[in-house]
Image (cartoon, rainbow, N blue to C red; front, side, top):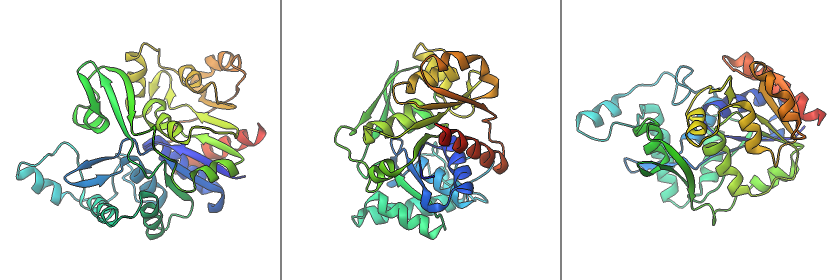
Amino acid sequence: MKITALAGGVGGAKLAHGLSLILPPEDLTVIVNTGDDFEHLGLNISPDLDTVCYTLAGLANPETGWGRVNESWNAFANIEKLGGPAWFRLGDRDLATHLERTRRLKEGKPLSQITKEFCEAWNINPTVLPMTDSPVRTMVETEEGELAFQEYFVHRRCEPRVKGFRFDGVDVAEPAPGAKEALQSADAVIFCPSNPWVSIDPILRVVKQINKPVVAVSPIIGGEAVKGPAAKMYRELGIEPSALAVAEHYRTILKGFVLDNADRAFIEQVESMKVKIRAADTLMKNVEDRARLAQDVLHFAGSL
């Protein structure tokens, strides 16, 4: 079964890893959000792309979900001591990734090619693609004005009240080479449990159309996001955060929806949208949970 998965950061990376444990590498493509990419300290940083790659490579920090395992912080500590911007933490191993990516981008290589080369170096066998080689930047509209995503998410710690989102550059962005082909050749497309507003929506705005069965996994369990500001965003946009709200967000393209067993009360309402539903234990605390959920999602996708 050929699968193309759309993923943001930590939750998306975990399910992508689970899928990679079950599927042959040639049958899995992961298209990753790059709307939260930005420039910091003169470096091109791709947070979601790096989180997915580090996780697939077994290099991710298991405690934070972002950054590298066994990290050191010498460069960051010295930047901070010298009075540099210390709000976005970069470990020494992680810093090497950004330095080398920036060098290759300045040479004229596209992000998709650099990602392919990094995956080869890290022994990542499934195909990992940025959603586009063009700059698309997620802007968060807040009551304090418009903020670049990392300014809102990391520097301001998601404190400003959200009013909406804008994806700068999305109208002219083309999917990365191989992304359209991966979507067309897939037996099913899986939306990993990532933030619908700022992780999956930017990808959908770039790829524009999906003609294969779509299965989404809810990133919200019991009215709260497992990680990140998704639930807060829903509330501030006047929507009660829930698995049902996630299903409604995607309802025009969904064939199947996976929610947590804690949210079984929404099954009937989701089914009323003419969407097939599966309840499962969706919280991924360890590698075994990732593989178990991935297997469940694949069985469900195969039944549609």
